[in-house]
Image 1 (spheres, one colour):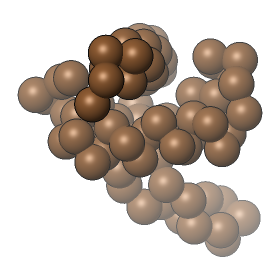
Image 2 (tube, helix red, strand yellow):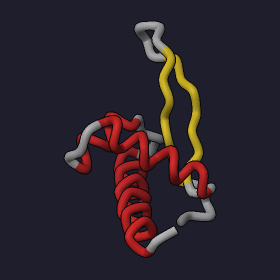
Image 3 (cartoon, one colour):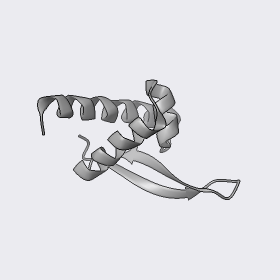
Image 4 (spheres, one colour):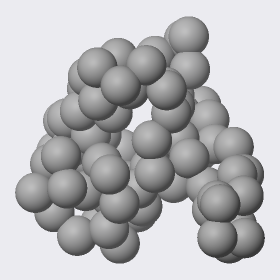
Length: 79
């Protein structure tokens, strides 16, 4: 992993940590994307990379309209 990759992942992890702390619950990739000002696919790409590093965990949820979705939360180990 390059230094640039480490900085980018640290940025996304800190934004996820701030957002989940302010809301008090895990968030979707779309909510994180709006918070950061990026696209949902970009947020999801970095969330998946953070999951691979063990810094983020995901949960499957069923929304009131019946659709399934993923929400993400930082792990206690951090990044």
